[in-house]
Image (cartoon, rainbow, N blue to C red; front, side, top):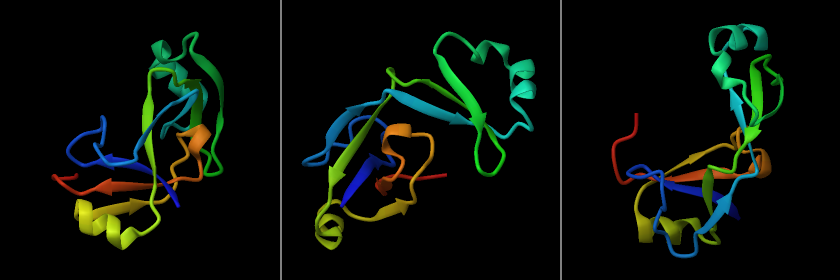
Length: 117
């Protein structure tokens, strides 16, 4: 199964055998404002030429789709989760996150090698 992979100690290269770096084309920035208008009023500088589109999530939260060219994620194919845990230690698994538009269906595996808030 394919997962997004990160380490608690670093959001950069997770240094995991077989991890592949993926450049994002788009990134979905979801916020807790009541509306896109409120967001634009409070943070007008966040609506610039890199904003591709805006909308609302199923829960009614506003979002903007922005050019993701400055963001990367790492993915890995894990065939045996127990073997992976034995090799890298404790992990945390997080359900798919909607902000990674091109990778919406991926669960995230965090290698728990440092403190998490």
